[in-house]
Length: 239
Image 1 (cartoon, rainbow, N blue to C red):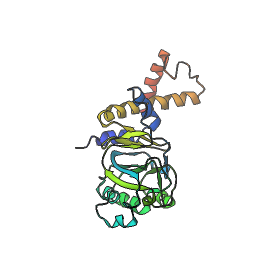
Image 2: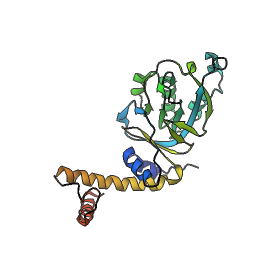
Image 3: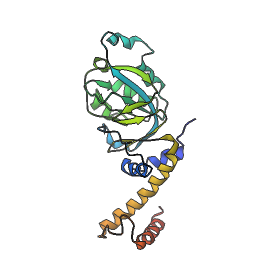
Image 4: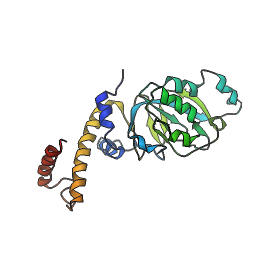
């Protein structure tokens, strides 16, 4: 059974990874933002979905010739065909972008199957083509060599590390124009609700700052009048 409701998914599509990061930090979670991973196609809006994972290890030449792709049970191929629609495939490439984690054909297949996005802490080949696809994609940098030259696909849907963050299958993955953050599945509803509230307040603050108001007493809201003004702003703006 999915841990991600449609209502929570919709909320997460409206908030930033920065705001989610603060909400997680309040709960003692300091290391949930995947490091050195960037959007290939940032115009898609937020990527949201449950994690489906693929793990690479260093390739060993006698076990990883190009003929392994003829095996229909090859883990990379299985991951592409088995990642559920609405999920995000997260790839552990050991932060090594010297060889590609995947290319445009596999990412295109994920798109057609309804996968919500793809993330690697390595690189994608064919990145200009991926940039034009209707699926959010995040990587460290472009990488032309085939994954077989350095990476050996070993496991799917197991706990992995991606960009120094632990990712369990079913964790909630959110990506925006800055990067990708991982939310433990058990707290996703409360994180999403809090992030929506935080976003409303920050929108109010941004408006007041543009009007010339000092941040002192406003952000954080240590002045009682700020709470009064925020309540009035929410009512006027339907927030």
